[in-house]
Length: 113
Image 1 (cartoon, helix red, strand yellow):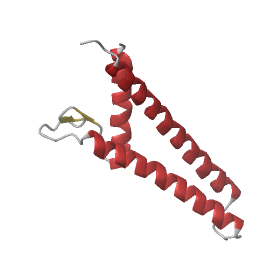
Image 2: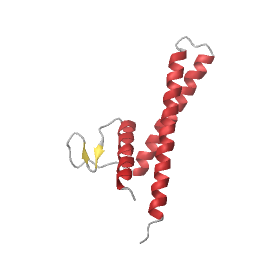
Image 3: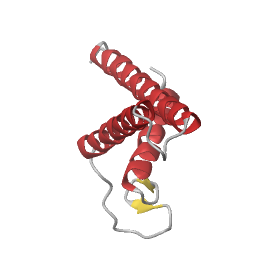
Protein backbone atom coordinates (compact mmCIF):
# COMPACT_ATOMS: atom_id res chain seq x y z
CA UNK A 1 0.00 0.00 0.00
CA UNK A 2 1.23 3.47 -0.84
CA UNK A 3 1.82 5.46 2.36
CA UNK A 4 2.65 8.61 0.37
CA UNK A 5 -0.90 8.72 -1.02
CA UNK A 6 -2.39 8.49 2.47
CA UNK A 7 -0.11 11.28 3.67
CA UNK A 8 -1.30 13.45 0.79
CA UNK A 9 -4.95 12.78 1.64
CA UNK A 10 -4.31 13.54 5.29
CA UNK A 11 -2.57 16.77 4.30
CA UNK A 12 -5.50 17.76 2.11
CA UNK A 13 -7.94 17.07 4.93
CA UNK A 14 -5.85 19.15 7.36
CA UNK A 15 -5.74 22.00 4.87
CA UNK A 16 -9.50 21.76 4.32
CA UNK A 17 -10.06 21.70 8.08
CA UNK A 18 -7.89 24.77 8.57
CA UNK A 19 -9.73 26.51 5.75
CA UNK A 20 -13.15 25.56 7.12
CA UNK A 21 -12.19 26.53 10.66
CA UNK A 22 -10.47 29.72 9.62
CA UNK A 23 -7.43 28.90 11.77
CA UNK A 24 -3.85 27.83 11.29
CA UNK A 25 -3.15 24.38 9.90
CA UNK A 26 -2.30 21.88 12.61
CA UNK A 27 0.23 19.10 12.43
CA UNK A 28 -0.43 16.48 15.08
CA UNK A 29 -0.85 18.37 18.34
CA UNK A 30 1.35 21.30 17.28
CA UNK A 31 -0.19 24.29 15.51
CA UNK A 32 1.65 25.81 12.56
CA UNK A 33 2.45 28.82 14.74
CA UNK A 34 4.53 26.67 17.10
CA UNK A 35 2.16 26.48 20.10
CA UNK A 36 2.05 23.09 21.78
CA UNK A 37 -0.77 21.43 23.63
CA UNK A 38 -3.37 22.42 21.04
CA UNK A 39 -5.69 19.50 20.46
CA UNK A 40 -6.21 18.62 16.79
CA UNK A 41 -9.84 18.28 15.67
CA UNK A 42 -11.12 14.77 15.21
CA UNK A 43 -11.88 13.34 11.78
CA UNK A 44 -15.67 13.52 12.07
CA UNK A 45 -15.60 17.20 13.00
CA UNK A 46 -13.21 18.01 10.17
CA UNK A 47 -15.28 16.09 7.64
CA UNK A 48 -18.53 17.71 8.76
CA UNK A 49 -17.00 21.18 8.62
CA UNK A 50 -15.71 20.54 5.10
CA UNK A 51 -19.07 19.24 3.91
CA UNK A 52 -20.85 22.19 5.51
CA UNK A 53 -18.48 24.56 3.74
CA UNK A 54 -19.15 22.93 0.36
CA UNK A 55 -22.89 23.01 1.02
CA UNK A 56 -22.70 26.68 1.95
CA UNK A 57 -20.84 27.50 -1.27
CA UNK A 58 -23.48 25.69 -3.32
CA UNK A 59 -26.32 27.46 -1.53
CA UNK A 60 -24.64 30.84 -2.00
CA UNK A 61 -24.15 30.16 -5.72
CA UNK A 62 -27.79 29.14 -6.07
CA UNK A 63 -28.92 32.29 -4.26
CA UNK A 64 -26.74 34.52 -6.47
CA UNK A 65 -28.14 32.83 -9.59
CA UNK A 66 -31.69 33.28 -8.31
CA UNK A 67 -31.03 36.97 -7.56
CA UNK A 68 -29.62 37.46 -11.06
CA UNK A 69 -32.62 35.73 -12.66
CA UNK A 70 -34.98 38.01 -10.75
CA UNK A 71 -33.05 41.10 -11.88
CA UNK A 72 -31.45 42.05 -8.58
CA UNK A 73 -29.51 45.32 -8.81
CA UNK A 74 -26.46 43.97 -6.94
CA UNK A 75 -26.01 40.82 -9.03
CA UNK A 76 -23.90 40.54 -12.15
CA UNK A 77 -23.43 37.65 -14.51
CA UNK A 78 -19.70 37.54 -13.74
CA UNK A 79 -20.30 37.14 -10.00
CA UNK A 80 -22.88 34.43 -10.63
CA UNK A 81 -20.60 32.46 -12.96
CA UNK A 82 -17.60 32.74 -10.62
CA UNK A 83 -19.60 31.58 -7.61
CA UNK A 84 -21.07 28.66 -9.57
CA UNK A 85 -17.61 27.59 -10.72
CA UNK A 86 -16.20 27.86 -7.19
CA UNK A 87 -19.03 25.69 -5.88
CA UNK A 88 -18.51 23.18 -8.69
CA UNK A 89 -14.77 22.90 -8.07
CA UNK A 90 -15.32 22.58 -4.34
CA UNK A 91 -17.83 19.77 -4.91
CA UNK A 92 -15.48 17.99 -7.33
CA UNK A 93 -12.69 18.18 -4.75
CA UNK A 94 -15.00 16.69 -2.13
CA UNK A 95 -15.90 13.83 -4.46
CA UNK A 96 -12.22 13.14 -5.18
CA UNK A 97 -11.36 13.12 -1.48
CA UNK A 98 -14.25 10.72 -0.88
CA UNK A 99 -12.99 8.46 -3.68
CA UNK A 100 -9.48 8.43 -2.19
CA UNK A 101 -10.85 7.62 1.27
CA UNK A 102 -12.96 4.76 -0.09
CA UNK A 103 -9.96 3.44 -2.01
CA UNK A 104 -7.79 3.61 1.12
CA UNK A 105 -10.52 1.85 3.11
CA UNK A 106 -10.69 -0.96 0.55
CA UNK A 107 -6.90 -1.29 0.59
CA UNK A 108 -6.87 -1.54 4.37
CA UNK A 109 -9.71 -4.05 4.40
CA UNK A 110 -7.90 -6.22 1.84
CA UNK A 111 -4.67 -6.34 3.88
CA UNK A 112 -3.74 -9.70 5.28
CA UNK A 113 -3.12 -9.86 8.98
